[in-house]
Image (cartoon, rainbow, N blue to C red; front, side, top):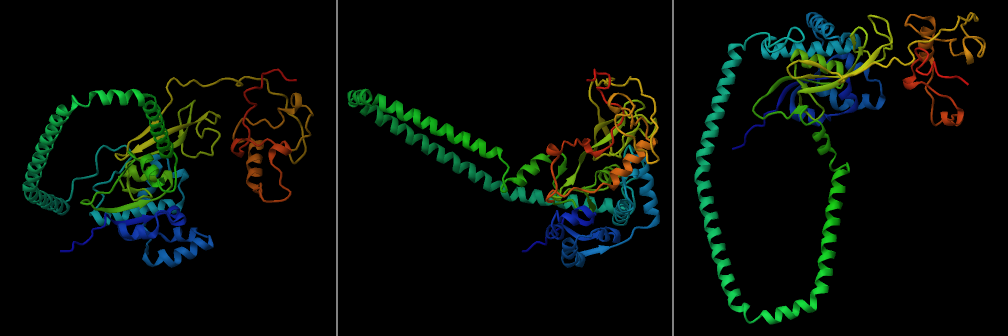
Length: 435
């Protein structure tokens, strides 16, 4: 009697990242879910010709395009503002989160299993009576099936135990008979065995040592081959890295709505709201780890990793801190124990301001300290020097490595800043002796 296959997820909401990278592939999505959802702006974001042609031919026929309601967008926007992720979320990201929230309410009969605010203890409300009756009915059916299977398998287990016991007894009796035969013939063969051992002692030692070395090299070869990541064991290493952070989908439990995205801010909002999050291997994500910026002076937190100045106190005291969010929506920062702020280069004499041209360019070596180190000194975010540097960075074109006229920085002598960001302050070695 053929049993119908039950897919573990009913509806999957897709972001632009998985669609563009084709990870997971469309065949896997169709095998694991009943319906695929997305919003119109996600499809319009993909402008690559090859990716767009692949999506139009393979994904669009199975994809349901739907716009979320205004109420859902307002609710998700307010929640993301409370978590601090709204500053790094685009309108498309908020719309995808709102669609996931709306489908969750439609499939589960309300937002009873979600959270209205970050850090909320428990869910919004009790389980509805219809859903609770369905869960109890499925659990009782499962118990009856397991009891029936157990009763059917009990006699087989007893037979197997009896068979194993008989085989063990037979093997023991055979071993005893062999020992008796060996004891009878041992007295006649003592002299010959001693002579044979004397003549072959050196040869046996050499063969034993070589055999041991061969076994040792084979073990080392196996250990070396296990350490390398090859195309054959790539999936195994990836699952080992994500072990504890994701959970395989159970066959009995069906997820009504789940979202697949590679955006850390969206993942944080999903987990804190209580919405289901899936990885690219179609496993339920229980724990995510990301980084934020935290001010060492006023303890203000920001999710915008491009910031160089604190948005509250305006000081360049932002430090990168690792943080994590679990399935209960608990947000935790992992601070370094006994961390001490380095005050090296904080106190120094600022040179007198130098008059320049209307464009702000000043000739090098003309005042502003020895070597002109204080001419373009940046101390605050609203300085014209900092605003000008950010604008020039936005206008700078990317270098083509395949260009014939391109030379690497090791030959030209140019030293670019880490991350391409403007230098803030005079540096840690400002008070050192200058040549």
